[in-house]
Length: 125
Image 1 (cartoon, rainbow, N blue to C red):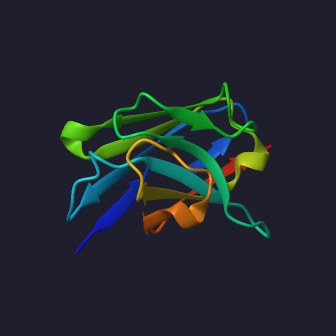
Image 2: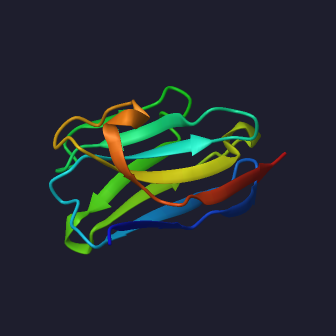
């Protein structure tokens, strides 16, 4: 059974930092692009950042560029999201996802066929 399990969410004050992790089990995602999406209260799920299988191609949403950093350790089948300078607007359930593509970190959720259950990030003002 393929699983993606996120961790690292929590409550933080504005300006603070959190590091999310996503561990894959049941199959390797070393040859797949992966991504982070989020869904805030009353909002639709939105793309945050995507990374190619090698880490050579990274695409950030404008709202997080310069504050968030994605990385992956294929040896550990793990992906990370370092979030700095957090804002109340970053409050959301953050999802890890595995793509059908190898090199293209799509911004479309429909291009990802594996999803975790999400980890909650709450940023207080």
